[in-house]
Image (cartoon, rainbow, N blue to C red; front, side, top):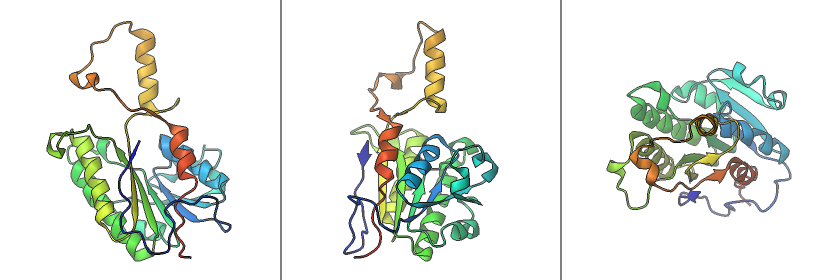
Length: 226
């Protein structure tokens, strides 16, 4: 896991709390229906923070054991009005969404969504945005990256250049039973003794356990000035 510089931090603010805020923070989690978001939410609750989840289909969150302990709101990160409503009263916003599956124009969609989120976060007085991007190969120029990694990198740059302080985490492979990619690989290895892999498979990944991220993020940056 790599962490980009945390820019625009306000004065008299600790970057990462050494313990829990006695009052707890108000956190917004986008992508809570996804693998990492769904595991981050209970960690935040356990740490004493209140959680609001933004989802296009809140019904998808109903089966999670923590569903009754959070506030779920309907919205889309490309819609300024729904994002503004979701960010009302929020201290820390976790941005865990991307548009890879939306078609050939996903890079523009990701760019527009990040700008909408950054703008509305500033308007709502959010103290920090936390974004999970992708780990890029060392020494590879951005224009040589895959469209997916290039878009992830650009979204991180949008947040770092925005007025709201941002923490951008970059991950390689996040290991955890139940995620789509993990289960797909497990399925293949159980059924295919030999596989032909693409050229990119020769690069050594930098795997991290999902628990590593969630445990780290459950103590979000202390965003109230002291």
